[in-house]
Image 1 (cartoon, rainbow over the protein chains, first blue to last red):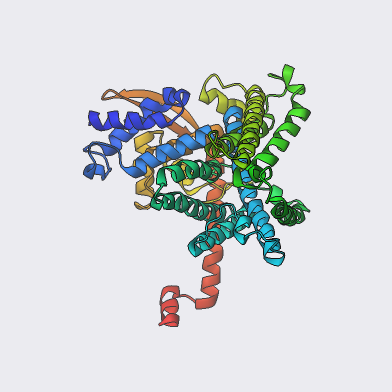
Image 2 (tube, helix red, strand yellow; image 1 turned 90 degrees about the vertical axis):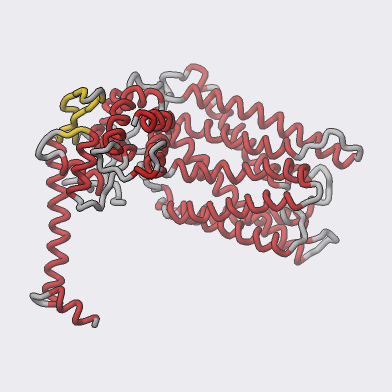
Length: 374
Length: 119
């Protein structure tokens, strides 16, 4: 039994250290008794390690503790809000990208300008299966974002996983290239733009997460529709400038992500940067930390995706221009990301002395009322 | 006004009515009360206990060391009993409504009528 308990102790490392210090022995005891000879556990088929459902229950507890929802300690709630914001921004970004490329493709179909239609897509690959996959994942992103806006979180998760599967399928498909290593090295970091928000969605919107309420505000759907139209219009516009090498680093996927992220990051820093200099205590709230931290987290996949396609050894002038602009984007992303990270870290509420104290201190906040039956 | 409890929370509170219980004791009792339908995993149980403790519905009763293992016993608090009572009343009312409607539609022998109707 001690080997099984040791194994369970290792599983408990998924929980925050402070929580483990308080609950660890008790959980090991409960697990040991449930798996023991007089226990009701039917885990005898896996005597050397806990069953997968046991491991999953600890992992889910770890996620809920770290990415707190309603009733969690302020610091853990701030991290929860951060991750949920990463998911929301990521989903709406991908939905907007769908409209962006749709706008570009429609315009090029209507007015070709001598530019191949494939240029309207993120990656010019002629295979018909690509079009099918891109259409499927584009539709999945749009409906997933709409589902999240309508508080249909489960549907949003399913569709986001569909889009993620399509994305990973494209990464795997690079292995069929004769120069697969180069393709994989350039393509795999791009997948981070999908992986990060999807994982954030799956992890952040757990059963303790506060219900999505902003969708009920008037004007939200008009705003989202307007955003979709704006994205399509920008796509149509971008397809016109897409013939210049200086434009390419702005219209591929990392470039499209880079622009709003830099604009949003700089705007946030401009508004809140000065105020935060003295602010460790006064402004340490979950909301003050979530925005800068979420934007900082999002700069990481965009930076990786951009870095992966930079070619410093390029002989031609066009690639040289693209590398120069791409490098400037990377430097800007890095600077803005670090500044946001510092700002967010300062705004994080202090860690509690003990988890029990945190929960007690938190009792005044509106508790988990109206939780839905699972 | 009682708040709606999740099913595991409902069973955990019910398991604590007669006496304080420790983690594994709660798991056993919940399984027994639910006729084997609800089998709490340890991670799930402690997530439920954390929420119930945060809402003051359960409290730590005592600690014991049994065969070298730490056992913490939890008891239901007064507000926990009130919340459970309110939720049980709500569920009973739901069940009563369903029973009344069924009786109105199918008469006394509900099971036979329903089966006869679909046969």
